[in-house]
Amino acid sequence: MKKIELSVIPGDGIGKEVVPEAIRVLDTVANIHGGLKFNNIEYPWSSQYYVEHGKMMPDNALDLLSQSDAIFLGAIGDPALVKDHISLGGLLLKIRREFEQVINVRPAKLLKGMVSPLSNPKDFDMIIVRENSEGEYSSSGGRVHNGIDEIVVQNAVFTKKGVSRVMEYAFELARKRSGHLTSATKSNGIVHSMPFWDEVLSEISQKYSDVQMQNIHIDALSAFFITKPQTMDVVVASNLFGDILSDIGGAIMGSIGIAPAANINLNGKYPSMFEPVHGSAPDIYGKGIANPIGQIWTAKMMLDHLGEEELGALVLEAIEDTLHAGIKTPDIGGKSTMTEVTDTIISNIEEKAKSGVLNSVTN
Image 1 (cartoon, rainbow, N blue to C red):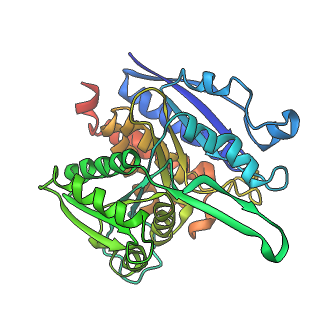
Image 2 (cartoon, rainbow, N blue to C red; image 1 turned 135 degrees about the vertical axis):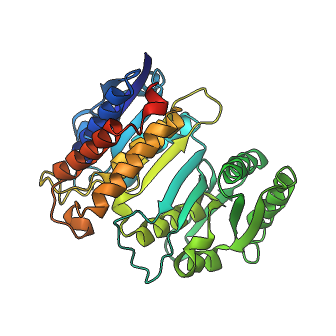
């Protein structure tokens, strides 16, 4: 029996609704597998926890999380209770930084049954690999003076180590997929960090002569995500550029509410963390209409990371079959409830298992 110790943090708003739905899907595939079991420990850390305790997590939170094989996170944030920079900095960003989750991975794929706002999306299927620890989001800088003389300095920090590892990860991923890598740059305008980014890319590419590479300025690349997304496969980008591109990816899929993400630790010292891209949507919390697909697709990414790629593929196929059948929540044009969507995904998984799809997994 393969046991996976899973730390579960539902968080705020609809996170508290969609995380249990995704757990139901994980339990379903574990039962079908027969040799897999999730031992879940749920932690109530959230904005409400901050109101009650004056902090987003207890002092020993990281020690508790470090004992797990993976962290399954819902959505963090409730501006009515806690300012966003406090809630994110006290939980999500703290975990990312302390656990050295230096790579952020976000797929963007035209799912069967989804309607893209693009007139001709041509079945795009890409993965954005984002540097997750430094770059433009580094907390280096400060403010001096007041009034008209106030000066604000925000430093973007790029290290050879940080840039090299995200590029190597992206090249390896491209090698496993179509053998095509696109790098986001802006070396014609950002005169220090981006030429450095390009130089490291050129250096790393020497080890991957089998991977076709292109280097595109971020403004043009953002446009290409809309005009010809089918030409992209693996896209590697800095922290800020990757953040923006992955949101465009979610938009052209038809909704950022279905987009998943993974925060990857490379050295094995700490667990990786998996979270949907969408926010906590407090305005619809409790109505039973939250879209669970982003969280369930996130569970698929976690299964892949844990070595259960066939199970992960099954989950994504079941999601697409559900969407294709028109079982959708209102945010993407449907009339189904959150539970109805999850129930249909689970039913599709079980039907595929009965038809022998998982023979190679369970034998």
